Image (cartoon, rainbow, N blue to C red; front, side, top):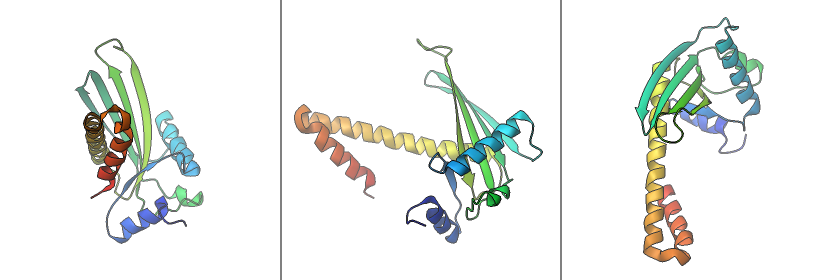
Length: 176
């Protein structure tokens, strides 16, 4: 295995007696497709395995967001596909539907599905909260970066500002 890949990182997390929730993306095609098929079968009612569901609704920023979190502890079949993930206990699907309730896009709906694996036991409410909290941190960091970039642009002017600003912001972002 290469250093830095998800397997190595997850093994280190488990070795330290910690837990993980890791996004499953297309760079893991077998895992991604298999989990998407599992949840599609669960949604269609053709799966005879247990799963848990939690729904939350938030209203703000001109939109209504409904977040449906579906979690299963049915992970043994992943080994048959050659998918060996240290400490894995749960599969998670988070479906977010955002409906615009104001402005020119009023009534427009967008639905996204994201998939995760985790070492935590299957508790839909917990996953819904934890994933939401992660995105809250991620978004707040992006707002800080945008603010710093705009501030540096003003300080250094338009000619060299973007290059200097971006370098400065990236250093701030990766520095402890």
